[in-house]
Each structure stands twice: as structure tokens, then as C-alpha cells.
Image (cartoon, rainbow over all chains, first blue to last red; front, side):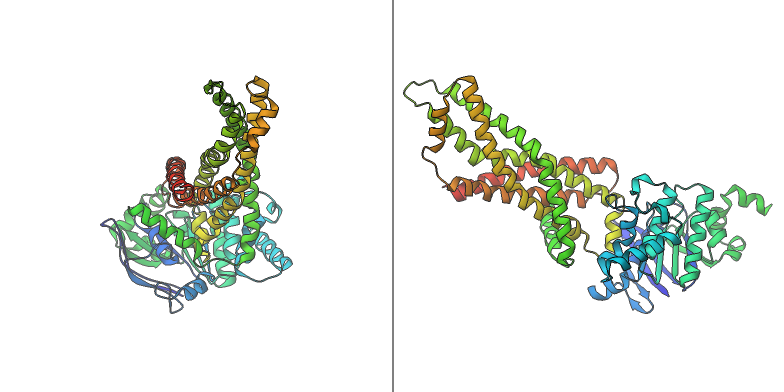
Length: 248
Length: 243
């Protein structure tokens, strides 16, 4: 379980996040939604330690990630998998090398064990035939799937996905969403997904947190998403023509 | 001043929380190939011509019949070993290797590859940059040794082909008043230049934020700042070691 308490962050006097609280459960795919520039990615970066918040706590199963010493932080980081918005695959490495990279760096497994595990993860995301290709030779959707394979190769307890559907066509987006959801169920991972994609909210959003101008305005499940009284959330949802027509 | 301070803090991060030694070995070998072998052609070409030009220009300026012809070779030798091979080669390498380091790391930064390393708990600066610094410090002196040899050879070829000096005069000039410390001095300078070029370029790339435009600007700054650092360090080292 991940708990965030009172997270605030400002850049150059501009308040980006204001006292964000929240809890993310194992086995759930939790979504953080909101328009562009509302602080979603900054919140995610605070949670995974890429940005230090001005105040607040991030607790991983009760362990304080921000105040722990370097070894404690490293131990928590090894339990994390992160899928970045642009996939963040290493250009100079093949698909297989990208996936096995965390194993090379962080484990003492034998060569054959590493290759076997990396191939297993590639198989899980349906890319076992792309192992020898370079990131520049594969499509955006495939890059996302390689990113997921790399993120799960160490059997993480916590999975973070930053806009996993950005730049993908609707069909590929659904496949990526389903893959994230299946992996979360299968391995009982605590998954946090940043998105502003309505399809994702309806497809995989078990728990949803809505951010607006750096503040948490609403939290609930996907069933209650369209019944909220929060004006900003309704405006955000109704910006989608399909939802507007469904509601008519 | 704050940028200089931030540069020294950055240098500190290269040596803290390093990964296991075996991780660096293959990276260093790879970087040695890219930095060293990949720069042989341009360094060789530049130095052959620089040696040739030095020889012909020196001959052109030595009009006094009382000055022996072998002085031309002595001047080519000393200027090549003391200044042209180490300093000019490193300025060329600042353009080739420095811009490459800055743009590679800058691109990794803006495409979140550096963040990907950080979230895995890997010290990204040490993992990405330390092998480049070590490879530069190892390979630049070898390139400069080759550069010095080729500059003198270039002078010989140009001088004898142009008829400004005979083969015998050139060889006797090379042997005349030779001080071996010149080579030690050139190598000390080169090691310092290699460290400056690799760390300044890496610093520029590592601190990029934005997009392609900023990566280009970082690459330009890397070359400019490296060249400034080279000429400043050249003066300081010459004062310290040759006076």
C-alpha cells in the first residue's frame, strides 16, 4: 500500500501541489487524473523520488520513502517499476538488453537466469519476437510494452505509469490499459497511473483521484465518477463528446 | 560563480554511491573505442597538416642565411610536442568528443532515460559519466602521442617535398637540444584537458531541461566552455611546469 500525506510542492514561488493526501491499495489500478498542468506528473515524481516535495510524506507499506537513509530508499526503489511517458528505453541497448538491465544492475542472478526472466517478461507483453530489435526500430505501442516489461522484470510491488497512452491510437491504448490492469491483478501490485484519457478512466480506473490546479478535488471509484457534484470534475469529464452523448 | 559551484558539486556525485566495478569495466572499454578509436582520423588529419604548415611557414620566415636550416625541424618538433599536439588536438576533441558527450547525455535527460536510471536506484551521473571521463583520460594521451608523431612527420613530408629543408637537416634538427620533459609536459596537459573536456561537456548535458533546442545549446556551451577551460589551463600549467 502507498500512502501520501500532505504533499506540497512549488517551483519558483508558483504552487504546483497543495496538501495532497491519498492512499493506493495493492491489486488496484489507481488513476490520478486531471487536465494538463494540474500537477499530476509532479505528484508522481514526488512519489517515486525524482522530485523532493516541500512538505509531506510518502509511505510505502509504512516505510517513509522521503526521510529514509540511502539504503532504505534503494530498497524501496528496487520494489518499484516505472513506465515513463516516453517509455525511456535506452537507445543504445536492444529490447532484450533494456528489459534485463535492472537484473544486470541490481541482482546477482546468473546470465541464463537473467535472459530467461527477461524473455518471460517480453512474452508476457507479447514481444518475444522483438528481443533483438533496437528501440528505434519498434513502434510507439511496442515501446510502451517494452517499458512495461522492464518495469515488471524485478517483480515490483509498486508500479507507476505516467500517461501510458500518450501518442497511441485508441486500439493500442486499450491494449496497453488492459495489459497494465491484468499485470496489476496477476501480481497484486499497487499500480498508480497518471492519465487524462477518458477511455482509461472507464476501462481500468478502479480508484480515481482528480487533481485541479494542484489540489485534490475528488477521489472515488469509476462508477461514481459521472455522479460527482464537483463542477471542475464534471467539466473535465464532459469535455469528452462521447461522454456527453452517453449522458443524454 | 553559482555554476562553477554547481560544477564542483556535480563532480562530487560522480564518485559517490558508485556501482560495482564490473559494471564500469565494459562501459569504459566501450567508451575507449568510441572516444579513442573514433577520433583517430580527425586528430591524425589535423596534425599532419598542422605540422606541414608549421614547417613551411617557419622556413618562409627564416630568411637569415646564418640560421641553420635544421632549426626549422627543431621549431616544428618543439611547437608540436609542447603546444600544437596537446592543445590543438584537445580543442579538436572538445568539438568532437565534448559535443558528443553533451548531446548524448542531454538527449538521455530529456527523454527520461536518466530518470529511469534514478528510479532504479542507480547513481545516473556516475553510471553514465564516470566511464566517459576515465576513457577520455586514458585515450586522449594516446591520441596526443600519435598527434605529435604525425605533426613532425607532416613537417618532414611538407618540408622535403617543398624543398625548404633536406631530409638530413630535418632529422638533425629533430635530434638537436632534445628535452624529454617536453613529452611529460604534453601528457600532463593532455590528462588535465581530457578531464576538463569530459566533465564540462557531461555537466552541460546532464543539466539540460527542455527539448531539442536546449540539447543543441548545451552542446554548443560544452564546446565553448571546454575551449575556454583548455586555454586557461594551458596557461596555468605552462606557468607551473615550464618556468
